[in-house]
Image (cartoon, rainbow, N blue to C red; front, side, top):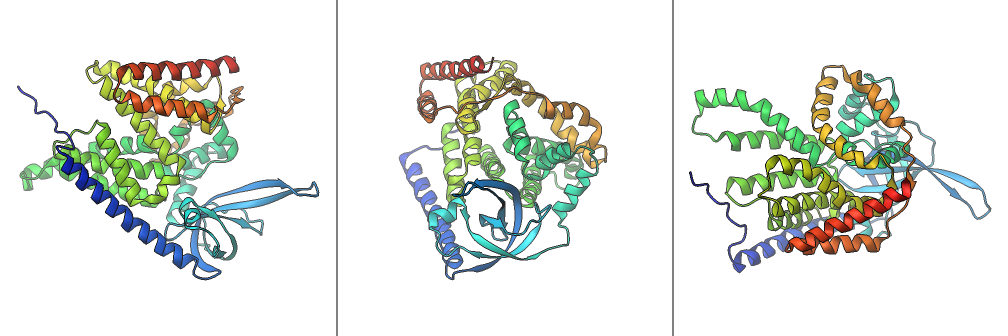
Length: 427
């Protein structure tokens, strides 16, 4: 039986030109809309906004007189998607997730600062006392755990709530930050679960009432609507937003017989996301997410003829080594436990859906004992930032490796050398 070959995304220079015009037009519309919102925000000295507290933390600073002064910093997201930081003059407790009405003074910020996320002085006018659905779900999770750190971890895992700095560092030392922060990996698992739950009920209805419909297409539409609702509900984290757009674009390509695992497809998806959401250009989480997908594609393109089992086993090692320089250059945390993230990542595919089922059924605390050990293990980590120059070399080698397998092996050796260097510094 002859297998139909997937067609390339571009068949002529005309296709490339038309795509470029479309992306540029889309970007112009998005930037124009953002600029309009920016002008509205800065039209007067102050503005009244409704906003949700995404994160609240204490920051200390030494004054010119040598005294230590503490500030409570709030990261807010307005009702129309504006992200900014401000000071809380009052010592308020348990602010995370609460909805506020604030007056902010942002009249002097630049358009670039507006896109990146800015700092503004503000005054809290009112705090909503009625809990939101997200807060009620967070409370539902908390009640299932005696350990507050475990509860905090699950809330981050399911509701994208920020972790305390101490926990962030621990997960970074263990090399599993990517498992706790909701990303495309989680979206993929959720999509697989939803497809499985929908498959058999849909086929029964399809066989009886609408046999002419496409199961895959209809199921994807249902799953996409559910995932889109979830994306909006948890506040559209950049990595999850990237994953959702890639999921939609990927299915459209698949449905039309266009090759999905290609750098052309990834580039088009990247440009489309940035054209729709230009603020993501300044998001580190977004670029880390894109980098992860890039290295998965790079592996699958060069080793597409390898045995599927071998691909599955080696892919985890490959992605870990390729993403390690990014992690070390940005966060700089490393320990002997760090390489074990390869194992944790494989196990997480089973843990994540199991954790969902346990929490929905009210038995979320069953796995608390091993997780408590993981949270409190002494990692003996070191804090060594990889110089940015090494990361630039990694990126350049990665781009050349798209076209050259020799460069791919050189890239692998380079990343492995960095890995051994850090192992030597920790041991």
